[in-house]
Length: 151
Image 1 (cartoon, rainbow, N blue to C red):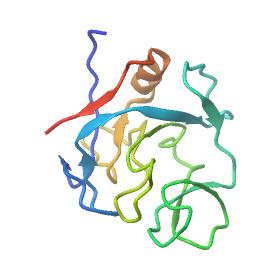
Image 2 (image 1 turned 90 degrees about the vertical axis):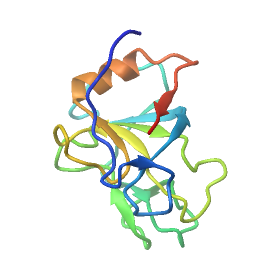
Image 3 (image 1 turned 135 degrees about the vertical axis):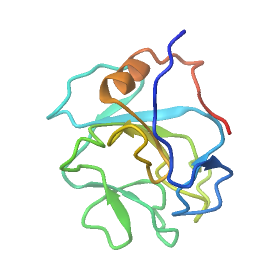
């Protein structure tokens, strides 16, 4: 749509994902599957399925977990990230289709678009934007839209 946005990527750079915890943002063309929102903090409307982030929501990052790379309820016996955070980083989260159908244990989990901590502050492998920019991207998302990550 003729716009560009500054973003932050994984601490391991952009490349071919090697495995869980490598910090690499995976090269590829990705769809957004769903959006998660801290509805107590934000009130945006988006054209994609949008769900509220609950107090007990987490995202499994343990390859040994049968729920690997999926939403889990906390407390959870396996390693996971909290989706509801004190900071604003996950106030708005778009789940990319990376390693989702089928899920391959250890290939990498939780590749999201989310709110950044600041310019040039790396992520764990996600792509992060200013909140207003991410909201614009998601509000203008269309069925044929894709996230394109290249070297």
